[in-house]
Every structure is written in structure tokens, then in C-alpha cells.
Amino acid sequence: MRILVAFLLVTALFSCGEKNKFILKGHIKGIKNDRVVLAAFDRSSRTVKGIDTVKVLDGHFTFKKPSLKVDAYMLQLLDSKLSLGAILENGEITLGADIKDAQHGYIQKLSLSGAKNQALVEKFYGLKDEILNQDKYSKYKELASKLRSAKDHDEYVEINEKIKQLAPNLENEVKTAQLDLIKNNIDQFFVVQVFPSLTSIANLEHIKELYTLLPESSKQHANVVEMMEDIKIKESIQPGKVAPGFTLKTPEGKDVSLSDLRGKYVLIDFWASWCKPCRASFPHMKELYKKYNKKGFEILGVTNDSNHKAWKKAIKDDEIPWLNVADEFPKNPAPARVISEYGMDYLPSTVLIDKEGVIIAKLLHGDELDKKLEELFGF
Image 1 (cartoon, one colour):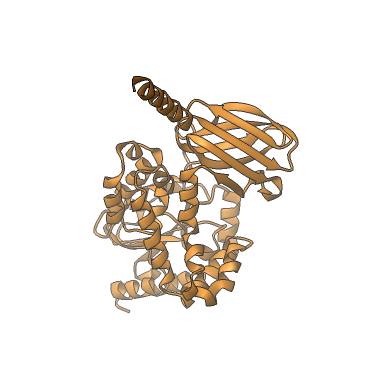
Image 2 (cartoon, rainbow, N blue to C red):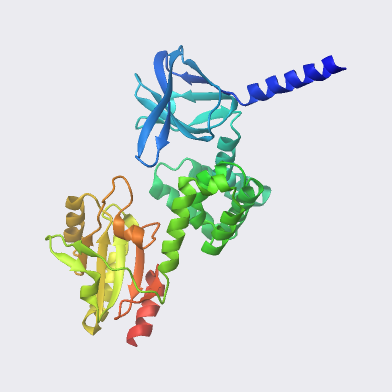
């Protein structure tokens, strides 16, 4: 009996040891001989650091390590100058890819088996397609197919808007499914990977509730730490709070401070020359500016352009009559300073402040902005 128990213990230990090993077997079509680096992204220095390098023979390669911390990793083909990324973890993982799927030096598509967290991330972002494949949405399958094959972001947005109009409950159904997936897998690494996406599917209170459910190790991850810091900023940029002050330069190099505009109602408009919705809003904003400027209304455009030549050209081409200043990028490739201090996630974004610099409202566009200005000025 003792011999049997000893044998079972040894077998169990050996099995656990094998399970905790990291083995990645990869095959990349279109590659003959190359070298591939397994690398991790160091967020503190914003650099990629190599962990191991192996040879690629006839498209095949294998990484073996005693253990690997679950995280997002890069695989870099040195001679072919191609990269691909995935969440990797302990266990035996099989990876497949094809260089035909490479765009701008990055292989977009890959198949991965044995990597639970990567599968959960793909499921999270694929829930919309999954739900659209249900029978009740069968009449939207053609649009769903077009959405998946959209050639660029603008086309994706256009098709997505059509789907929203035809199926108004779809977005809420997708968000609910995504949140359920997170709750049911709250202890998995995939949650910290998608955590920055939560602002688009949940309100701030809901995000804070999810945060309390996270394991302590997840709370320490940079994605989560940065997200919770961003939430603190967002909570400070609410109606009734004083708008953070800043000083930025005009196209002519002159300093303009937000405090210079005290005594006026000010609409801070975060935009960029490459943002089509931003520039599409300008004709209507010009009407509002003409209507209210002499009554004490000012617009302060804050560009997110790092290319100041493109910014200045857009101001000239669009004949923008209001003040414009350029945001700063003190840490490249981190987001611009002022838009980060205001907790804005997308362009265009607006913040309306009163004569004393107190926030009245934010993210006002179109009819909502019209109504608020009519309310303030009485016409």
C-alpha cells in the first residue's frame, strides 16, 4: 500500500510539474528559416524586452520554459521583420499564423489553442458577432458580415450605426453579455486585459464594483491601476466641479490660459485634424459662435495633434474663428496631457464651463449643446 501511495504522489507531482511548464509550439505559413523572439512589454519604460530566442525551421518553432507568468506577449520574427501578439500562460499552447495576414509588419490573425485567457479575450470582443448570429437577428446577417469585413474605421462606424438603428437593443445585449463574461471569470488574467474597455460598456459606479471583486494581484496590474486613476479624474470632471486650469500655445506661439477666459461661458472642444467627426461639427459650431460670442460665449479648441503643421492647415482650411491651442505630449507615446487631465476617452469631446470656471456639462454635441446654450443665454 505504501508503495502505491508513493507512486501516486510521484505521479501527481510529475503531472503538476508538466502542467506548470510553458510550452509554445508555433507554425507560421510563408516562413522558412528565421529567428523568433518571445518578448514582454515593459510598461514603466514603454519598451519591449526579449525573454528568449529560438530558431524557426520550415515555419516551425518551439519555446519551452519551466514557467511563464500569464501576460500579453509579443513574438518578433527578426529576419522577416514581422510581429504578432497574444496572451500566453503555462501549459502546452499551439499557435498558427500566416504571413499573408500581415499588415504594416504585424500579423493580424492567429489561431491559438491551449491559451484560456486569449480565448476569453477573443470571446469578449467577439460577442457582438456571436449575438448577431442568433436567429432573432437573422435579417441583419448581411450587415454583420459587412461589419466584419469593413475596410477601415470610418466604414465600420457607418455600418455599426445602421445596425444600431435597425436593432436598438443589440448594444445593451452585447454589453450585458460582456459584463457577465467578466463576472464569471473575475479571477482570470483576461479581465485586466479588457479592463480599459469597461468605460464603453459600464458606468463608473459599476466599474468600481467590479474592481472590488478582483483578486489583489489583478488590482496591482498597470491596466487596472491606470483605469482606477482615470476614474478618479473622471469623477473630478463633473458638473459643479472647478475645471482644471491649463496654459497652452496658439498656432502663433502665444500662451493662452483657461483662466484668461474667466467672465465668459467657455466650451472646451477637444479635437484633431485627422478626426472627421470633429471637423464635421465645425459648421454648426460656427453658427453657435456667431450667435452667442458677443453675448459672452467663447470656444477654446484644444487639438490632440502632435503634427502642428496638419493642425494649422485644418484651422485655415476650415476657417475656424475661435481660439485654438495645442495640447502637449510630455511622455511619448502617452496620451496628451490636458485631455488626460480632463479624463476624455475619445474625440470630439467637449466641456462647458461657466463664468467662474465651474463645469456646467460635458460631452455636449448637436441638439444637446443647442438647448444648453439657449438655456444659458435665454434665446
